[in-house]
Length: 285
Image (cartoon, rainbow, N blue to C red; front, side, top):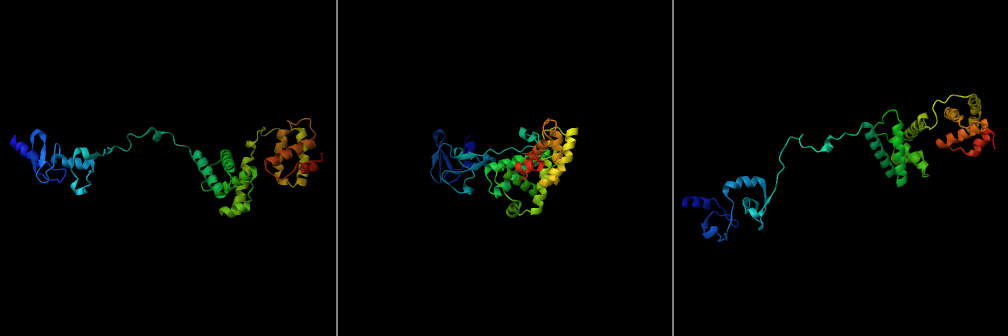
């Protein structure tokens, strides 16, 4: 027993001076021969030193240097639990396996973000920004193909339409100057935008409505009316509107139907045509 006690004392180190010379007092107390410190549990066994030094973050109240604090009192040790290494494919959260958004949804999100950035650069009000994002989603939903990334010109075309709808108009040249996008590309993108949004699929009326004798007579008169208004390029769109609405306006005078359909189309396309101009062109008061 005496040899075992002697070996145990030689394996101990003092907390204060880290010496290995101790005297065994009664009732489990030990006194350091170097500094005279007497405590009940002054040290950690050397056999545990290597194991603990790899698993704990060692700090001492006295603020001793790192090289001298590799082994300390267990009450002064801050344990750091390391995360066990596992297979990276194991224990993943359920969110990782949720369905990823489709490419169309990514395009809608990225496009709305691009429109938002341009609106921010132009210092537009918040209600204009929200309306521009709605117009972008409506445009992209109606497109037969997906949009390509980096289409800044179509973003600016959407911003132009949003500004016009919200009575906060910005000209094409102003958008080109502030954003650096070529003016020609913005105008070309706006033409493509209006073509998609004004397609027959976007109208609430019946598509491919059959032509009646009454509508056929009005279609023969329509080119003369549009020539007076300077809208000869809109002949196809207004003709389709007349064919679709002729059954709903049955019993009205042909001139009244032509005027109503022309005015409806010009308002929808945001053309600068007044009611007085249309009435004068069709010959009604």
